[in-house]
Image (cartoon, rainbow, N blue to C red; front, side, top):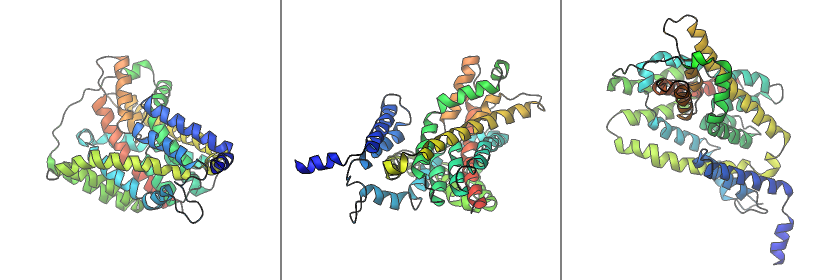
Length: 368
């Protein structure tokens, strides 16, 4: 009984705050259905590592299982890369291959990353600024990869921000889109013409993208390579069972372990500080400007195009797949119940997956 009382007395108020944060993440996952496969394990992990004298984290010479998982799953980039295989197997590049110019919107929607990099460098060193800027891509695995590569001091906050903003896409993006567009622009119809994409094209595409990305941004090869390898498994036609395993079992299992392992960097002493609030603010700034970049680029193109583009599809150029595409599609239907933008926004969304990974690789090349 005395040992229990001694443990309770060692509980700090900061740890109690982290329990509350963990509980909030679990609530959002279960009650609001916001990225439950990520927020639930992150929330539970936050509680796990902030218990006084928790055996889940390293105490003296006794290595905790969460730290062990972190060293062997995140510190060496294993979990993010395995997750990319699963994501690649989920993605159908057909809509993008049917209309390759949609790739431009994915590139334009990375504007916020580089803008935030400049802004964040005023507050933190360049490596931490680069890690924070990637939050704008709304791409959790890329955020983990870049932040871990630079050994950022704010890894826990960066990861929580990246996945939280992915979950908040339906809340954050619509106001930004409405602010930058008129009702007339949001009602622009874009008929979708289904084009037959050959199997050969679908197989060559991931190989081609890997080679091009490797030449342009060598440090993105592991990221883009694993993503495209997953897609090649999907499209080759001879590994259907492996493709299904990658999409479901592998992706879900790695996501669960990734979520709970992230908690290794969510201990109260490292997480509860003014810098965490700054990171959340800068991450939101990057996310908003990525969305704005895609929308404004579409509006710019409309100045020169005869067949106008609905500028809302530009917002889907972030990496949050397929949430952002669905948000744009629903907004189109709300303005005009016969305006179906899903296939266009999906094409832009998958281009954002590629563009965000390449952007991460470019930042790795630029920042030393």
